[in-house]
Length: 627
Image 1 (cartoon, rainbow, N blue to C red):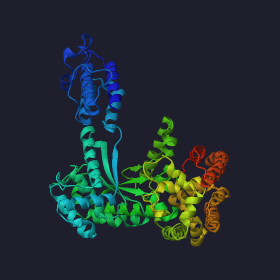
Image 2 (image 1 turned 180 degrees about the horizontal axis):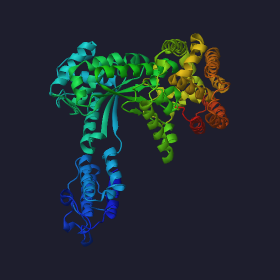
Image 3 (image 1 turned 135 degrees about the vertical axis):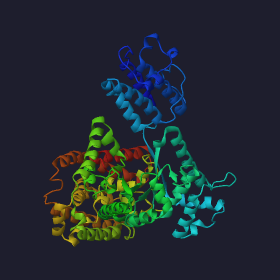
Image 4 (image 1 turned 90 degrees about the vertical axis):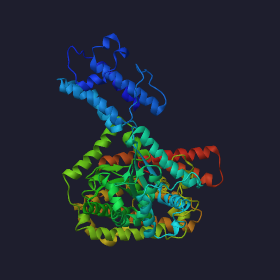
């Protein structure tokens, strides 16, 4: 980014080579000019060019200060580095304002204005980063800090109310908990170092370099206050009146239970004066991250979507009641089982008010290259989200999911939840079926993720991370996280009722549309062949039989509710795209099954390993949003 700024300053020097015999300049512009001894004879009467020479020298010094080396084209003289992006913007504003005040406003547009806008958007850091950590890790680190400081020795044994009282007391005063004379575990030292590095990045690259501290598995007020304690130890939170927090504390509610309790947790959080004072110094803006992947693995596709909607709606209402501006960070993945699907439809289907302050969306995996790998496609992808967000505010419409259809959709969610949990968490041997009927063990060997496939060495589904869970079912062409439970639940609630809701609910139509795409990409014929990899034939026949029956029920329900004769009938372009790719994907699936069978029979040759991994990549590329 700094190189880009230097290039643009150099280019502007050519564009603004205007003699002061022809133009007037402001006093501020005169003060910004480089001294004559650092300019050539031809530049002596070019005030704007001399001002840009100063800007170039200061930006070159900034590059040295931040990156350790200067530009290829050295500056004319050694200048003072810009301490902040705002200081650089101030110099650009001097040039812009002088041009506008002296009849040369047209010269202030174009390249100069674009440079100023780029600095305002990207600062010296280009991309803002978030810090993210699991609440359990914070809990242990803070407990150790409190024990070493002799504040409380049994923090982990305290109930929630007692924990909150201890944390609020510590946050109210300036005393640090960390001591250079105490010994801490490696985990605690790592968390302290992360906070220290975040503070260092903000000092070096500007306040926008690190913006948020996201807390995974947030389930209580203490989870957020523990984060504040770690921020305080690094100087990222300064107690006072009001307390000043340099990072926004962003809870991530990701399981079904967490989503259901999110409004209660945030209400208690907002009730504390210290929290309200801290938020007041942050423009009363509270960001909340919503987890799509883990809520899906926890409760299935239908329940995940319903509880996400209800959680967001309750938080929007709470924000309006409490005078807090709520912004939502959607932790979506590429696959439908992880919140994937049409970004436009997803934004338009959000509860009213959920995008009033804009929104943040994660783009992950193969979605990044497919949406943003080409500049034109990247612009189109961004424009789609912007348009959807604008329309959500300019043309807010009601949704039957919030009114006459709410009771039936709640019943649909409950029935789907029970059926999904009955298979995934209550069927003896299901973990064995899943691991043997999919390439999960082989996927775990791929170097495609930043974290292990499972949170522990346990084989339990609960400990498996959401990405390999969804990705494995996609490879086996079951796509279970994107539909299972809907068919049984839909027939229980009543297809006629759901058909009526479908006609007047953008939320429900989007839910159905995403399922259509998943059903179109799935193949029970291939899935049965993958089930043939399971050693226990009785287990394989039993579990696959239930999966196939539910797929048939879901397929029939989707067609009945949407009024189609086949899935994606109303979206022929997508149907054609999928149908063109499926013959190649199917062939790779057959090859993968053969290779998996040979490997599991004992063939550990490099050719087998490479072939399996190539087939995994090929199937993923063909299915596209599969992980």
